[in-house]
Length: 63
Image (cartoon, rainbow, N blue to C red):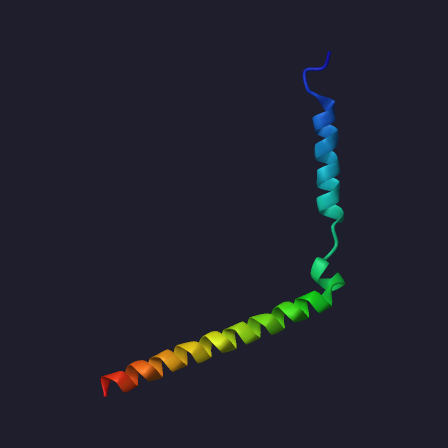
């Protein structure tokens, strides 16, 4: 009877092998990365527009 359960060792070796063999996901899916960048840029633009509008309204309210 073994003191160490060998199935756990084998399972961890498979997990380590999977992590080592893993390829670059972003290189395989450039379209998804492009969409993320476009959506991020549009989101930043809209947030900036919203903040500018609020600042202009606050400035107009003070005057």
